[in-house]
Every structure is written in structure tokens, then in C-alpha cells.
Image (cartoon, rainbow, N blue to C red; front, side):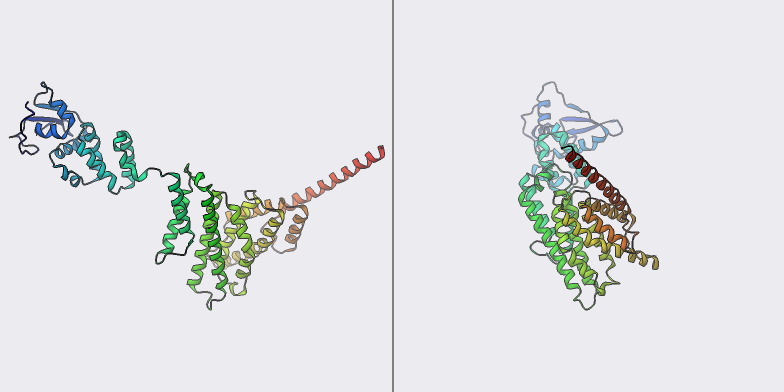
Length: 431
């Protein structure tokens, strides 16, 4: 076969001008013949160029393919006949490009390989397609790696920069971004939570001083906004106004979000301290007579957030001095004791009343309070237990377990004291 002859215009499958026949097995297992041209095959594929340069190659080349790759083989042969500048436009789907790419690499078709890579790197992927692309590219090796540029892990500084920007947006540092500020803020919050997932770079990012500083600023911002909205609420002529209530609940939602993410950054103590500082002011407002029969959703949400704070302190995840723990209990325990029967009564009156303290919330708060009480100095325990027994609401939270332990410890402490005094007396006499 003369490969040095001047190439004449030809088209794929043109039997009249064909000098090479390619034999493929079709999807039904029968061989199928494709009339081709050596001038095209040699110029577009190094595989065919090597094969046809062999004097004994003959005019028929057999290509083995599976049923699943048959159509992609045919597509590759058609692409060999297109001008280079038309290849990219001829690719019409991720599946077709992904099917042709490994064949183009195997047959060493450089132009087609480059176009498939360029196409796959640029077009959008569906979730299922992304999984398939990653799987196939990893099989193909370094030549196809540019396709995965969009999902390559970033360096630490880039990750840190994105995280800081997301936190700023999520906490409205620098102000909101109307008209879609709330929607974008929620999206940013979701992304921050996702980035705080189990990624190996997460500890490195969250331990960074600049990141912590920005997160603490965000905490201060959301707490300040919540306080301001709540403080201005009583000044609103109509406290049932939906817009005012919505703004407060949005601010409280941001506070609760901070409460959820800060434990992942070892910053829960900052949240506990911030919550403790504004607790008195919060309760002064929500216990105002104007709100006696309003804002039930706010009252329940406040208990939910407080429950998380009590758990963090009560179970030793956040270490605070005893006076701070006492203050936390004495601030919120009376309110919890007051609001629980009110919510139960509302639910009894109206079975559709949606704002309740569910069983899990009640149990978690009660357990945290008992743990908190038992970790206090004995005199502080006595004060809290004495106050509990004076109230009408002994049922919730039930501190009988803490009372039993306190009684046992008091007797044990007295016994130890007497035993110690006896030992001292005996020692004095023996001298």
C-alpha cells in the first residue's frame, strides 16, 4: 500500500475510493465492514499509521470491540474524517465524549483526544455523570487529568479564603446583600456547615487564628443583631405584626446556627459566654406582659438554644467557673420551670397548637440541669434545691435525683469530717 500518494478528498464509508476496510463486530455479534482510507487513518491516528506502515498489513484491519463500546468505535471512525476545527462542535453530550475518549487515547488520535478532554472539562456535569467521569479519568491516567480541574482539592490558603468569605456572608459581617440577602445568607450557612464536615483539611483551617477571629466577629454580629431586634420589638405598635416577628426569628435562627457550628471549631465556650451575657436582657423582654400570649415560637426556640448551652456546660464540654455556672442556672431555671406548664396548657386547650417542648428536648434539658447542679459546690446545690422544693412546679425539671445525691454526699461529708476530727483528737491525746 502506497502511503506517500497525494490524499484525495474522500468521505467515510465511500466504497468507491476506499483502500482500507475496517472490520468491527456489531452489537449483535455480526461483523460489520467500514470502508475507509489510508490517507485519513495515517494522518489522524498513530495506531493506524504504525499498522499500515507494515508491508504485510493488507487492506483489511480487524478491530475487536465489546457491545458496550461498539457505537463509540463507530463514532471515533466518523470523527477521523472531520476537519480538526470541527471536532469540538461535533461532540454533543458527556456520554459520547466520555465514550470516545478512551478509544482516542488507545488509537493515539491526538486531536480527538484533546477535543474530548476540552469538551468534558468545560461542559456542566450531572451528579451521576460526575461519578462516572471521575471513575473513567482515573483509569485513563495523567493525560485525562485536566478534566478533573473543577474538583481538584484547593490549597490550604484558598480553602481558608473561601471559608472566611462564606462566614462573613453567613453572619452578615459588612451588612446584608439585598434583594436576595436572606436566601444567599442561608446558602452560605449551608456551605460553611458542609466545609466543617469530616474533610482532612478542616482542622487546619479552623485552627487558624484569622479564621477564628472572623468567626468570633460573626458570633458578636449575630448576637448583637438579635439583641437589637428583640429590644426594639416592644416598641412596635402592633406586636403581632408578622414582619417584626419574622425579623426576630431570622436573627435567632442565625444565633442557633452559630450554636451548631461553633462546637466543630472548639469555640462553643465563646457562644456560651455570649449567651450568658445577654440572657437577662432576653428574659426581661420575653417575660414582658405584652408577650404573655404571643411569640410562642420564640419562647420555644429560646429554650432549645438554652438547652444546648446547658448541655455543653453540664456535661463538661465547656468549662466555666462555679459562679458562672450558678448564674446560668439561676437565670434560666425559673423561666424553664414557668414556660413548660404554660406550653402544656396551651396544647391541652388546642390540639393543633404547634409550639411544644417535645419529650427529647425535655429529657435532654433535665439531664443537663441535674448534671450541672451536681457539679456545683455543696452550698450552691443546697440553694438551688431549696428553691426547687419551694415551687409548685416540682415535676419539671425533676431534680429529685440531684437531691438524693446531695443528701448522700452531705451525710458522707459529715461522717468524713467526724472521722477526721476523731483522728486528730486521738493523735493529740497520744502526744
